[in-house]
Length: 110
Image (cartoon, rainbow, N blue to C red):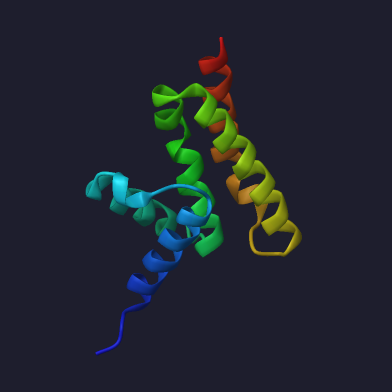
């Protein structure tokens, strides 16, 4: 029996998150599943979903380690730009996520 489209989507998003430096196995199962479902509900493609989820995790990373969170935001911004250049994402779909992550970073740096 083959894997469902949902399972393949989830696996690809998980793989992309790992490439972004996020170990999704460390997330509580419910949180991981919830974030992936939100991305699916938004009709994100796999790359947009990975960035959406990664930006959503920024506040938690900042709460644990501000420098690690700053580096994550920088890495995500560079990746979003590169993926946009390759037409893998529509950055306008990520605008709210980016704004929220940057606001969290500003608060953490105060």
